[in-house]
Image (cartoon, rainbow, N blue to C red; front, top):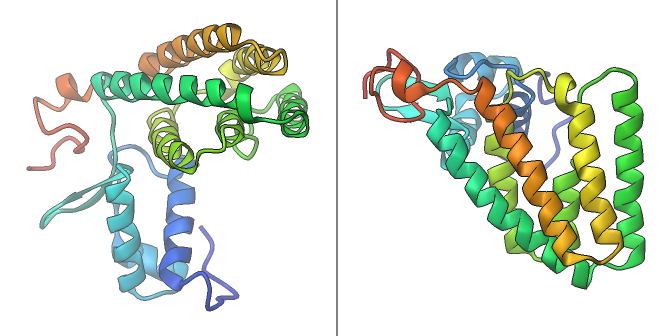
Length: 234
């Protein structure tokens, strides 16, 4: 994580600190359950502890970190039950998104998603995992043209991305791309039933992949509060 060089008045230093810390969390730079030191983060970003503290508070509200009084801040860990709950919510949001997209998206917008798919395929063909900067689901949600839906879906996507941060994304990247392609074909055909069916199939496969790798914190943490790293009193 680089320092906050070339600071500007906007966004604020706190906002910049938030974006940088959030970015490295979602990239898997810290293991689930790892302690995040305000002092170390502030030194690395070359800012005071205040902006870092505020950034971590915001990340805690988003469910990406856990603040334990008198103990510190930890990267969120997800047990199997939490993953299932997030996937249930994601099914609702993604289904709503494709329904709205079929009605509201024009051909140019759909063409841009098609181009995004082609770009993702090129990256995957080189042996890399699914490129995080070519997020198919966020692109589809934007087609729905509903800002509240986009905001809610973004929070769920981020939590699931953190939950699978240790997974071998390259091993499922090709399958995920094919599942996305099925959703896109249905959108291009303006076929709501086919789009919903493709979304359901994709999310079922995605959930199975995450659950295969997600630690069952409820069993492994000896009954401690969900999301809190093992060994941390609550």
